[in-house]
Image (tube, rainbow, N blue to C red; front, side, top):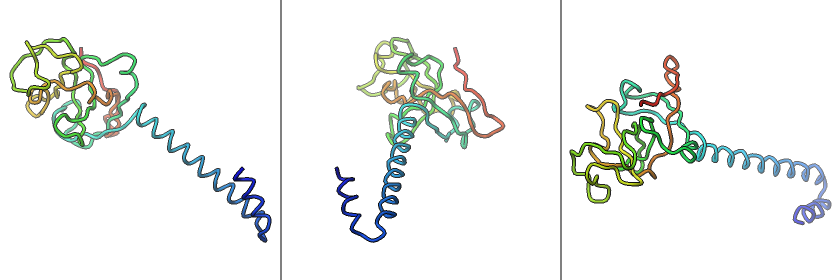
Length: 178
């Protein structure tokens, strides 16, 4: 309807036929651009994403800084989380930061009690509560993890790390430990 009225109005302008075709082509380009942006957003939000490492908590699996990791956000929706899986999560202490740790324990698993983790997600009798996981870095001496802040809500987990993409000499899959 609007397109027909615009075409009728443009007939009165000299050289408007070319202008109308150009406007139509520009409109189609805009629509295709928005479709591409929407598709990329869906892929990033529900498919795959990238993260970089900062900190020595996962040395020797990852370097202290500069590694680029590919993580996927889809399979946990169907298969859940696995013990030994390296994950990217939102930091429980800083919602603007990401952390990269390994899942050590799942809900119902026992973990050693050794810290005051606060009231909201305290480990009762050494068991991980439903809806939480226990995350630790592979480099215990340099890792600030569940041993310091307690179990992490599953809702903070963003995805499973599948590959290390940078540096090129270290490209490869990230293994799940038993």
